Length: 295
Image 1 (cartoon, helix red, strand yellow):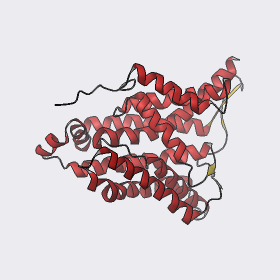
Image 2: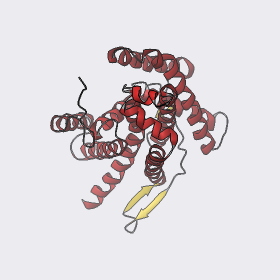
Image 3: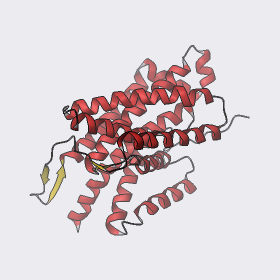
Image 4: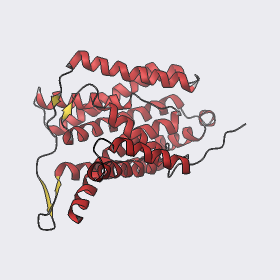
């Protein structure tokens, strides 16, 4: 019983780490641009396809495949921001939301035309095997170790970046008040583009790690992880970097335990049910700040 609990906890933390990495992209974009980029999940899918073909068809080593996926997704994120979102900077939030959904369907259909609808078997970028604990009673795969380590490193790096670098401080200023930041000489458009670039690079990493565990790759692969990661961002407090980590980990653990102890079919419904309960109690999320509207 205890061993099963520990195994499920490890699997939940691994899944939650992937959700946290994806959620960071959502939370950074929302925190600075005040928009929900629902195409973020499809950037995950594009990154996974790039890595799949780089390592499979072109025979590149896994590290090179991941780096190439990050570069392509970074460029894609900036292009999407410039072409689709920048012209809508002063538009109502509903127009931006509809555009984001449109970009999402565009990316899915482009992937369908380019790579077909047949599921592709993604080869893990992490070597097979794992570490045995408690005399071999618990096994932690290398994929799980790499996923959790990547999440921790990304969190530390992002926290240091936003707190200590010039661009990071510009991002924080834009998240507080874009108009005031512009008056202080900060290039708001460049700052928002940088946010999309970072979020998209993280999406590529998350996509590769997700497919290293769940190996079936299709043009809609990124949709559900993207929605769940958005849920994690809201759960933890959208706009908060620590909130994205907390929300992602909690979501992964809740989903894994629900799947193991309650019902595989109901696990997703249980996750969203917990989200509703949390938001009823804390509308801003667990670590989110309640912002008063200026009149």
